[in-house]
Every structure is written in C-alpha cells, then in structure tokens.
Length: 227
Image 1 (spheres, rainbow, N blue to C red):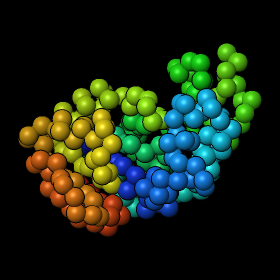
Image 2 (cartoon, rainbow, N blue to C red):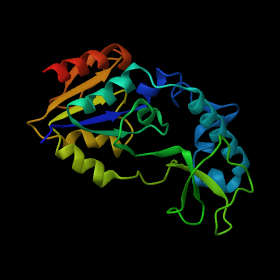
Image 3 (cartoon, rainbow, N blue to C red):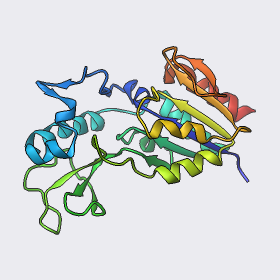
Image 4 (cartoon, one colour):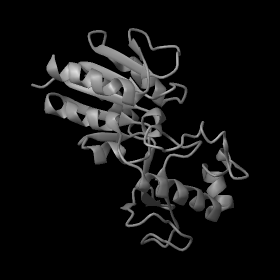
C-alpha cells in the first residue's frame, strides 16, 4: 500500500500565481472592509455588493495558472497516496493535476442556494448575478465559507492528518482556526515539514523550510519521489 502524504495549503501557495490574499488587500476592498463583503449579514444587507466582490475574485482565479508548487504537489501522486487539504477557494490544485482535494473554505467556482446549502452548482461563467436562482426560487450565493460560518469537512480532514505518513504544510500562517489546528493531528511517526517565506512559530515536531512555495516545494518533492 502506498504511503500517504497530506498536503495542507494556504493562501501563500496561490499568491505565487498572482492571486491576492486578504492580507495583501490590507483588509479593504475599494471602500469596504472585507468583513462587510464576506459574511452572511453582509449578503443579507447588500447582496449585489457581495456578489460583485466575489465575481472579481472569480475572474482573477479564471485568469490565473497553477505554479510550480501546485504542479510539484500533483507529481507526488506518481509514488504516494496524496490528499490535498486546502484553505484556498480556487481550483489551481485541481488544474495542476491533484486528484483528491478537500476545500475547507469552499470553492469559488461553485454557487449554492441561499435556502438549502446542499444545493451546489458548478458555474459555467465568472458571474453570479442578482436574480440567479436555485430551483427553490432562492438567490444563488458563492459556495464559500464566510466569516461566522462553519469550516467544511473538518472531521474528514482531521482523519486524513491522523493517518499520514508525511505531512507538508505550505503557505499558511496557522492563524485561522479551527483549520490551523489540523496540523496537530499528524502522528508522531510522520515526517512533518512546514514551508513559509517568513520566520514564524512552527508547529511542534515540524521541520521548517524557509522560502516561498515555488522556491522550496519542487526540490522537496523530487527528494521524496527519489527517496
């Protein structure tokens, strides 16, 4: 049976494909605080503005391409059982070739019903507009986790971490909980590597590699593939 690698990714991976993180945006979008365009309360108060914010993000994602780190992660499947657990809402892991991706914070290229969260639709274009409705007659919204909403697939992700032979955490500040707590589920026997361009507190028993994902991940992947 193949060894299992869990790859845990955050915004730092997609930033190298040109996608801005909330931190890059300085907490603001035009004159709006990000909390005012990324919460259920904001959507109820001003759905058109919230949809416009995510329409812009969606256009950015569709114009972006996977980078060398995304592609290296996908290559791990040549030798390992790989599960990618990501805090990112883009589809760059999938486009790079990763076949098992769990999105903790939802998927920007999907919409869901405002009335029934189990009704999810793959978008055919970049826009969700006012008047785009589900079969129940309810306005469609982005299929993403907003401030104040529950993270998705957390139990499933924790189970994968607990079964990992290797864990690679990349591009995450480990400040967004509960997702950040997943790194602690890795077993003591697992090889654990944490990649970040900035010096930061590293989870216990993780080896720290300083550098961006593109700078460090391809070489590490080649090492694991040839080992």
